[in-house]
Length: 236
Image (cartoon, rainbow, N blue to C red; front, top):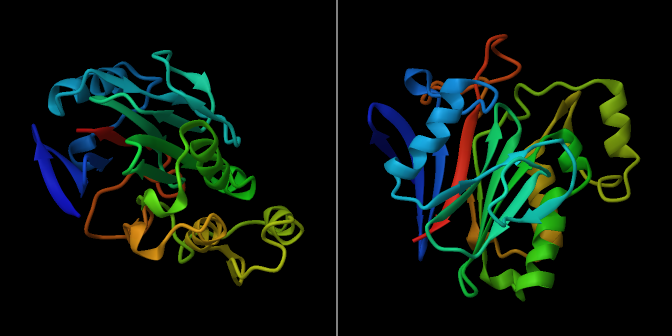
């Protein structure tokens, strides 16, 4: 993991064998909110900044659907997959978990947006299933990069959310709460364990979007006027 600077903005890069995983920060007010003109312009600028042909993204709906990117942006989904080189696929976040996947054998990449609803619905696990089904991916070949998100130190949830997890088939007997605080990291790791992803292939950025002091981050819970970060991956 390393910090990189691009035209005054800061990104976090994980260099993978054959791919790059990139997580934006909020330094110098960098935002990728696609509902704003500046956000749209920054998405376009990624092509120039990282020498990309295309940047694919979604209209995220907090669901559990993943799509194979065909050049059409803003489909209603929370996971996006491609095997095209120089094509980035990414997700927006500001407390939710951005997860980047790379099948190093079959050269397939995916980006997943997992808020509490997507985490409850196991979107990450379902995206891995889709990689296995559509691209013949195997768990031993999949590298997973889990980006900055709100951690259990800062993520208190209500009784309704707690009940949903405690009564779900997947999480019912799993330890995912610290008092009233939901531990999204544990939820994700449980899904990866269930899909038999090898621990050495899990790259976890230990950065809380709410309380970390090393990086500037957009946080839905912390700031009323918050932007969006963009986490993306592309094949070299």
